[in-house]
Figure 1: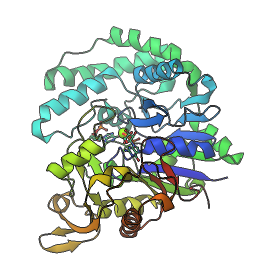
Figure 2 (figure 1 turned 135 degrees about the vertical axis):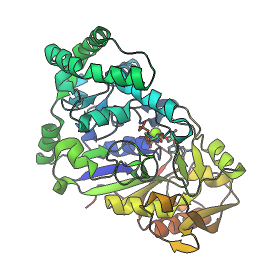
Figure 3 (figure 1 turned 90 degrees about the horizontal axis):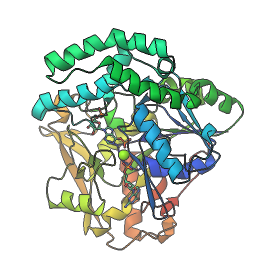
Figure 4 (figure 1 turned 45 degrees about the vertical axis):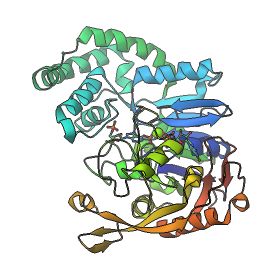
Length: 431
Ligand code: GDP
Ligand code: IMO
Ligand code: MG
């Protein structure tokens, strides 16, 4: 028995969905532990492309159980639409494949209104959120005003909690944000319909996962967002509102830390970021544009163009340290095939001083400039490579240098979006 945590080692969209889909083969349960439908995890099977926002990326595999842990925030409408979409495509034939912990916090209409209106009010200081209500719902969780799935399925409890919280929300919405207040009865009508459909998925994620662990089954934990978007350790305030590092698994599922064996960080062979905030290796030029075009770098959730830049080893070293990564899965190597030379940022410079550790002080980070090493490109199509030996020697040299400066070995290389465009170097579950 072994358990594996998958997390994003950059600012999100590293290809976690694809890697989780592949590793599901070796596990029995796939578990989301934080975030919500701000995530967009893309799976490509043959010619079919599926983007999942809430349901774990193991769902395409029949017989594998997918669990949404208590640390997730759930928009019931999006969740039910996702279920319908999967069923229409012939997946999720058995509803017992899916379990949602009763303690997940529910995203309410006012969370979305507040998220979007606050961003609008912030002008050029905005965070660039996905507008899905993520920050406001986590605020209510921490502020002990949240509504959980256990509350939603009990009509009187739901109505009581909504009655308590809505006047304050409407005060902010109307008086501070200048938007239209929300009607209690409309919310009750809409959400009672969701409750009726959600009930069959409700369960206890914490005991379900514990039972699996006790029975010696392999469990795969699927992170959303990325390490540098972590609420505590990311580039605050330009972060999401949950714990995206491996430590988030324990509280986001309800299991003890001794159950976590291996942690694989997913990283692109370059970097992207959506939304605002510091990004030292960002390329605001034709090179960045070329990466965006070759890598089709547009958000899977909002469709926004992603900001692009060269691989940043300082940032990935921070992810290795924060989550104790045991391996890296390096994705989108094929996207770099168009370049004559490729750069890797090995350290930063700050006012003439060499910086080798990712600055945790925002004021320093925003003034850092990258120090690069330039490496020869391979300029041939590698999308058919099945093993390391199939890659050109210069591509292997790039990977060798990347893992050296990142301080973590590679367990998987991805050379295209499809399942068969994957080089598995070692067993990520091996202990
Ligand atoms: P996630 O949020 O970490 O799951 O990543 P996204 O799905 O948001 O973004 C990754 C994008 O890259 C998706 O469109 C994937 O289909 C695609 N992708 C994943 N791995 C590769 C790869 O190795 N090469 C290429 N060209 N595309 C990839
Ligand atoms: P996956 O799981 C990339 C970013 C937003 C914004 C910041 C806060 O697909 O990798 P939020 O809506 O969470 O309050 O937005 O976080 N962000 C992501 N960026 N991938 C994601 O998820 C993201 N989820 C949130 O763009 O900068
Ligand atoms: Mg994504």
